[in-house]
Image (cartoon, rainbow, N blue to C red; front, side, top):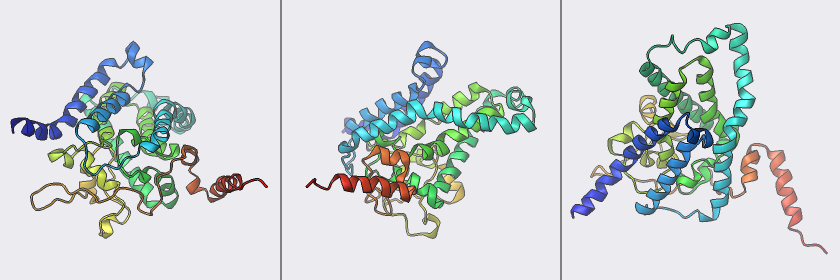
Length: 318
């Protein structure tokens, strides 16, 4: 009985504990040889932790997606190892040009000592980055073109560590990288950005496929219980949720503030899980990473070209 109670309590405590440990380790290795050798150290630490949790705390509604593992690994490698550098090379010159040209170089690089104490900058970076992610994510559901790109991420039928970074690259850049680049050129202290990023690591845990409980953290962080409803194949029957719910990437309190939070409970106060995860329009999960990479669903001509060649290749030779 005592062991079972300990296991139940650990379902609530494990993710906050890991957030503290991984956030601390991330800050400790920053600037060290290990940090330079593995820039995405925290990403891999989170993945390793979540994969372990998924095997210890099995989720009763889990749907196996083992056949998608190579798609998942390819997408993860592109997003974690390549996309940040490529996006920076493309967007930073443009982002630098306008402030530097019209507001002067000091605006870009001279504010780190004028924006207040370090802890104020940490709070500002944390709030601004999450606001960017919330509104960009919400817009990606409202805008038809962006939804066609973002919809690839919603094809997954079970949220788990391996498919956290499964998405079209442009979709991922808009939501997770562009805002960080903007904050970087404004002049926030790089240490403040690093600390805020360590706190934001909890966004990775939203794709934990284990049976974890959020408790009161459901109303601040984007926990797995909260995020599963974002991935529901059927949105709640309410005009507020016409395009989805729970848009916060790392936090949920913005959804509460802006009226897009949804987390139903039963009569005993237990969170009700969505009956099924998947694309709301019925699209199957895309196994072909190249189709996802090019976002062919958003470009009908390209989709017809690829599918047409596939159809021709399937015709037997006479």
